[in-house]
Image (cartoon, rainbow, N blue to C red):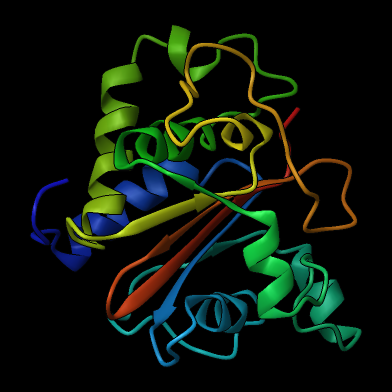
Length: 191
């Protein structure tokens, strides 16, 4: 991945084009702990803000869970150890494909990213979003496809969920970790 050159407005625009129309959770937060999973948990429970003031995307239906006193909603409350145990590493290239794939309604979409006319533009937006985290970022996913290798071809076939992080029917996520921030990108429609 290129060096961090993504301007906040460019990043916000790419994120919105990519994930605005699907049932997703996309938020970033600072690295405050030695254990990146603690920082990811803080993003999932919304106890930290994006250090760059960037956009966040969340379904309005999540507010019902927050109002009921569940700050992690739609995620299950989990420890950092639980989180680390249920995600697998990915290469930067696979992470771009996975993030691009989160832009589709997987279970219902007739035309997944791999078949779309705007495939290159969707992949470019995914690269822009992930460029924010720099060339040394680490990528983790809950996908079953990553259980056997760190570079699955997320565009070649139907995506598979993994360990469920929610009580929703289907979910799939990507975690990005850099030296100074983390990103959590989750979709709730994986098959």
